[in-house]
Image (cartoon, rainbow over all chains, first blue to last red; front, side):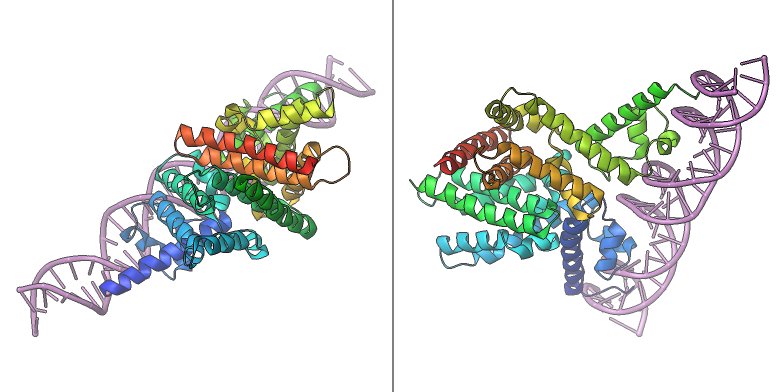
Length: 189
Length: 189
DNA sequence: ATATTAAGATTACAATCATCATCCAAATGA
DNA sequence: TCATTTGGATGATGATTGTAATCTTAATAT
């Protein structure tokens, strides 16, 4: 209940963001209350508005945070090829399928965000272009192959999560991997 | 407020289902209240439980209805090839991207349904297998190509809806069409 | 040291939610 | 014709929601 040092405020702010980025992806935006997030951040719900103007503002910020989490690993790679490989392996991993809370926000929140076109949709749209650019064939500035792969990846993991049996879920991941190879070999010519 | 004829009850039941199938896909499950649905069906919210045990039960039934709506057109085709062509054209149409309320429920509700594995997830999982079977190469019982195409289609339309600009949205549809051709020509050998 | 500031806690608010008990009237069966 | 049934309307339930005003207290500035 005290006033905290300036750095402590940033820490609280960061904990709220981290909690929101996880809970939104795990439970959905509508299903996650401000109180849920604040509790997960170790705070009480009343203090929320010292950090964000509204829940919608938090959604936008949490989406950006989630994108950063997802891309930071891949972008830390020494070269482009390695970055692509890391991104693909991570995206199609069983861990990614089984842990939406730390996975791609386009999958977990895409449908919900596409509905009300606010700042969150802008965020999501540019995230999608950023991921596609990462996957695109290096040479030209032809992002089409990257967009096609993103579509396949997003669809494969979405369906892998929907799949009732573990066998079908695993098959969806395998089919995604195979499909990416097919697309890649085609666009390489 | 009266007691209606037996056929009139079925009609009410059907109107509730139709309204639910549309509103759930348009606004999401959490964001759609029982009262919203009943109002859209021309009834008052209290009477809902004469037709369904719970909102969850309605979700399952509405999902099934949505799948039926989507597949009926394609499955009315004279032959398999024509059915596939119709399904693909419908799926990647701008109308489908712009009207989630009458589109594929796997896209609109997949993330929400994958979260709480109840009967709705069973429904969604079998819907996904059914669509994949429709798209699969006729010869063997190898559904893998069908699953790959479903992943690409679902991903492409999801991203087309997320895309902020109409240009990017149209490009996602074009990329989806192109990608399906690539996958198809590869698996045909 | 004192005054000021502001982070977070507490509490409250007006809405909205899913669910249900009760009531009403029309359709059915005798 | 009359009693019974039942679809739907009405209204209430307790819970939960986003948002905000108020209070408390520690960190800062003077």
